[in-house]
Image (cartoon, rainbow, N blue to C red):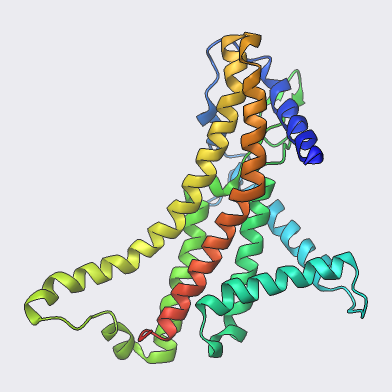
Amino acid sequence: MTRLKLVGYAVVFALAVPSIASARGVFDPTTEFEQHEWVPIHLGPLNLSITKAVVYLMIGTLLTILLGIVLMRSRLALLPSRRQTLGEAIYEATQDNIAKQGLPVKAIGRWFPYVATLALFIWVVNMLGFIPLPLTGERWHGVPTWGIYAATSSLSVTLALALLTFVFTHFEGIRWNGPVRYFKSWIPEAPKALLLLIVPLEILGQFMRLVSLSVRLFANMLAGHILILTFIGLIFILQTLVLAPVVLLATVFYIFEVAIVVTIQAFIFAALSAIYIGSAIEPEH
């Protein structure tokens, strides 16, 4: 626990130092989430520019691949090393608590890699969002300022991840059941007079899954980061040491986000993805 406190204080210090240059009453935590084009790339109507979110996603992707190689490519031994033990723990946790809970047995071999990778990737990107990096796009006396930013606090990122699950869900539903049987499963048994009301609601419910997946992750990560930045910014806005205890509160909240929220959000997103895909493959369940 002492190590976690030291890490928390170090993070708060790294975030606070550049903020000393801020003028009284100017600090606005929402500006940390603005997306500016670092490398403009426009192909007709498509905007493929490199922004802060894209850079964080690239780093998160590389770290996820590296983490998978380091943990899952180790040689198996009768007396497992710490690396093998951790790799096996992650594998078993994603298989038993995510894949097997949501996917039918016949689909685990095909979709376990997807939901496991999804959980690991979101966890890495979320965790990366709480590590101060000189990627704010701003400079202080010519030196890049350090700050925290989570790519998953951008709705476009979480919506793209949710779209993958949405497309895979209906693709598998049609592949396993055929289009007629699959879409017919959306219509519950009810009096014909109620079907005109129920069917549109069922269709809307399918699209609400897309909203539920994307907004839940986005809102939790955005709210957490705004609160942390607000706690730290208050000291420099009001320019008084009376609010110094706020640093301690920010540290506690930071540890809570890193230790609990990051993992829970990755788990929920992957678990719901497995449930949605599994329910499409076996709609009668």
